[in-house]
Length: 212
Length: 287
Image (tube, rainbow over all chains, first blue to last red; front, side, top):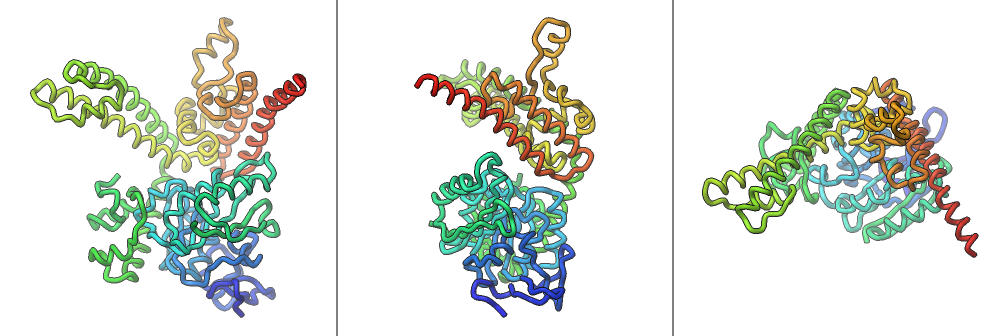
């Protein structure tokens, strides 16, 4: 069942008559389930989209993860299903309320009501040398957020980033926005792979990077 | 803020304050917290550490969410007014402290920074003790002002998510304070929001003594301030229009609405493109 680019704990399963990406854990947002597996909708999750598109994420399962922009916990709940200790940072109280509910039954998912732009405010909780940072924040300065959070990442760790062009500047071509963001990232990271996520998320670029 | 030093984890210190430290604590850099927690005896093993972190972070974040959702527009109004009072008083008192310190010490500098230097001195004699103590009050007031600004940063997005995103936490709080609350702000026409904080200029205009003001407190917004003067009227009008809608969405629905923010960014780009078009045209004319 498992494929080379999917971590252990992420599989394609038969759910509701379709073969779908899935993880095993308590349901969170009314997603379809079968035999304890929950469908992971790549149209609702940037990381799900990256797996569907065959990105080399470097994840094999059981990693320590820092997730920035956890929102109501849709994606991070799947991450916590296959990863190890998972820190979920979200700044807005309303979605964070749902995030707490998703975290409650997952004993290695730690919800934090924090602003991803100020890592100092959670550096006393999130451990150093995490294996992966997953980032999906829809504010301006997405590359800057990734750079500031590089301090948490192990030297051989992976940054899995979705850049939303429209959050940076709606008047500039997405390509130009992406170039600018990648330039900023290259000051701290080595870019390993980039691919547009348009099949699932319009005007988004998926990026895999590792610290320089 | 907690009293622990900048390199301690959330688990260092008093057991009863663990949740509070998850919410309010900070550290300059992350460290191997699970390892350090085991070493210090806080947890028996890494697994035990993660169990405790899970329990504490879920409870702390649930409380923090509740707290922030409870924070209402009136709390924001109190906070922004208190911040302004602290700032004004600190500056006034700093002047007094500097004048006094200047008569006692050779190298006394003016302002809050000057007060900070004086406050660090070892005073000798009663007069120096009083002058140094006064400077210390100035420093405390300035710190309180900064703490209030941080609180505003934290609660404004809960009270008015769209307004805070569009205007920034501080300006959002000021607009709400000037209107007397989020509801009154949501009920104002955009032309009123545009000149909130410029009441003197507005009344001068209404009594026929002056042109109508282009902007009030929204002048502090980057979209107005960093637009060239001849386009600032358009920029303030566009910004005020969207801020009004943001306040209404915040008051009546409370959901974040991305399209509002995109529309404003597009509109601002159009307005700013005028300056570029004209300079391009001028350049062509020169050629």
